[in-house]
Amino acid sequence: MLAVTADARVAVRTRALTKVFRGFRAVDAVDLEVREGSVHALVGPNGAGKTTLFNLLTGFLTPTSGTILVFDEDVTGQPPERVARRGVARSFQITSLFETLTSREHVELALQGLTSQGFRFWRSEKLLGRDRARVEDLLEQVGLLRLADKPVGLLAYGQKRALELSLVLALEPRLMLLDEPTAGMGIEDVDRTIELIRRIAAGRTVVLVDHNMRVVGSLADRVTVLQQGRILAEGPYDEVRNDERVITAYLGEADHA
Amino acid sequence: MTQSAVTEAPVTGVDPPAVGRDLRRRWILLAVGLTAALVLPWFIYPPVAMDIVAMALFAIALDILLGYTGLLSFGHAAFWGSSAYVTGLIATHYGVPFPVAVIGGAVFAMILAVPLGYLSVRRSGIYFAMVTLAFAQMVYFIGYQWSDLTGGENGLQGVPRSFFGIDLVETDSFYFYYAALPILLLGMWAAWRIVHSPFGRVLMSIRDNTPRARALGYEVEKYKLIAFVLSAGLTGLAGGVFAINHGFVALTELHWSTSGEVVLMAVLGGIGTLWGGVLGAFLAVMLADYLASSGFHGIDLVTGTVFILVVLLFRRGLWGTVRHRWLVRQQRRTAAAGPAER
Image 1 (spheres, rainbow over the protein chains, first blue to last red):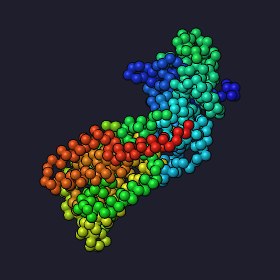
Image 2: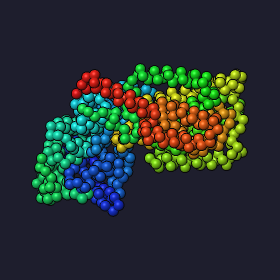
Image 3: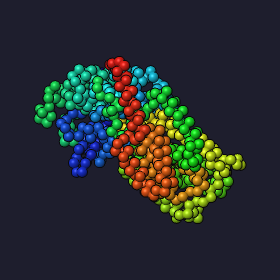
Image 4: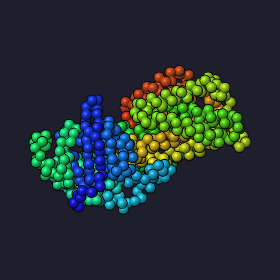
């Protein structure tokens, strides 16, 4: 990984980003800066606003106030599909897939997402399978090639999470937002997923939410700690980990896996 | 691995793959269906046979939205009825061959669907149903009030059935059936094409998981709007043929009960299956015809009861249930044939 220099470009910049739900400030005046090419982790106790922040960054929620810049372009208030088309791909915390299709069909659909091919209602669905090599390459990357033709409903949990990552990759994202990519995984799967993320993160910017400190510690260049919708601390993992406020707020109560 | 994708999947009541995987079965079904369509007027009074096929296309068109996109339109009478009127008016005033009039009606339905769809697809679930119902009631009201054009409560009378001066078709409903059948079959083929296209695949993913589809970059509202307009166009084809078949357009065609009837047919047959619409229409029309000709007046009572029973006993509709059983059996057989690849 290249050293992050002072003039490194900024992938995400929020200014006074705020989201209020019925008087509850889920995200409160957050100024976040994610450097291009870095792996940036968001951590914090439950209810700290991580997921809300994610939804704001990807257009699934509209901020109450504040602005969001992605690669220097204002995306505040844009719908998710527009944000996705700017090279921002996200994974979902709840494994979020179309149960009845196969892995192959999932990746085909993901590859089609940024094209206008999806509007071709007069063509055969076989058109989707045209880029077989690319589909199989993506499945190979996440280790699902041999299960390509199995309905996703039959995949094991860890395999579904891996498929989630292949969908994210299919979008050729400049910025990937990964929402708890290792949640609920067994220890071997976690290690494999860390390796996988490290590999696909090369040359891209990653924003990561994960409760597993081992994942954060081994992947993140920078860590932002959120508490009650505000930024509590920010910096390299080792620095943040030893921060007094962070220890009391978060690490003290979490497992040091 | 004991769980099964087939038994586990549908929370929506929509049957799983909907992506055809068995070509042989598909061709056999198609052959059976085509044969049935061809011999139908030999066994059933031809105008009723025509109604069955028209209603079948109507139900299929609705299913594009209901079964494949996950949108329950409760206002499809607006497209069915307005196309019936426009077809009738074109046929009456211009004396063109009836297929031209029908196409005119379908085009009108599609044009009408653009603003209605644009305003409706932003809502989902029950709100979508209510918005479409409200718009359809507006169209009904216009049809009712604008009696100079539509004949108001009396309906549009004496719609001619021109067909290039071919007497047999113009006067004999048996031959008319065969002249009009290709239009409806073409409509059904179009529905099949739409559902089994890259576009159809996107519709199904929107149905199953809208946020995920959005995050993949799909412009969900645009897809829904196009599906809405296509569905309205096919509905229009059916409504136009229906109008010519009867030589008369009643205000009922615009009434909300027509919207309800087609939803009933689609659900009866099984949504998300296309064939379900055909089966549902066949049963509903036959039942209504049988009851009417036997002088029974509580038609709605009987169809309503049948509907409730089907929904309670066969959650997936008649066709959907048959297909589901078949899929489960097939899956068991594959599982028994050899340990699933791991």
